[in-house]
Image 1: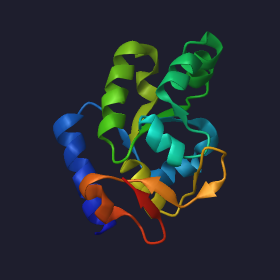
Image 2: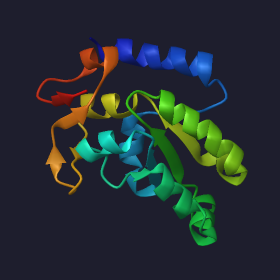
Image 3: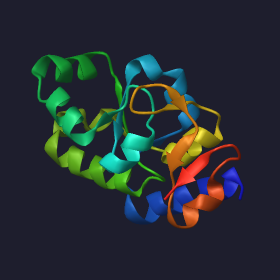
Image 4: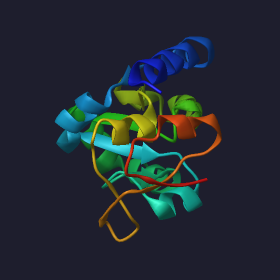
Length: 155
């Protein structure tokens, strides 16, 4: 399946379920990685197989932004907060929830377009729980068709 199809599917999801949210591409996140906080909204099991380097889970993120110095750093340095999951649905849902909880950070919040599927399809690295590069990733349901060659798929 093509990345174009994946992107169209993501755009449709955003229009129908998350029209109030902004999205950001994997290329843009990679370009601005030093100014970006990546929040992984996948399950602990999924994160245990692989993750984007330096991403944090939802509880780590809540603890991080619970610190006023961290929150001020995000605002003052206009840092991106990027929510991701397998494709974008859970990331979008948690982004909406975060907008209600952290109203002062709404302008910094984005959903990662195509999430981890798009990340690996664009050749960006994922790591295991010890932060070593890996080709293992959890992909389930019909999203398996978007998995690039060379990856070990767990579902």
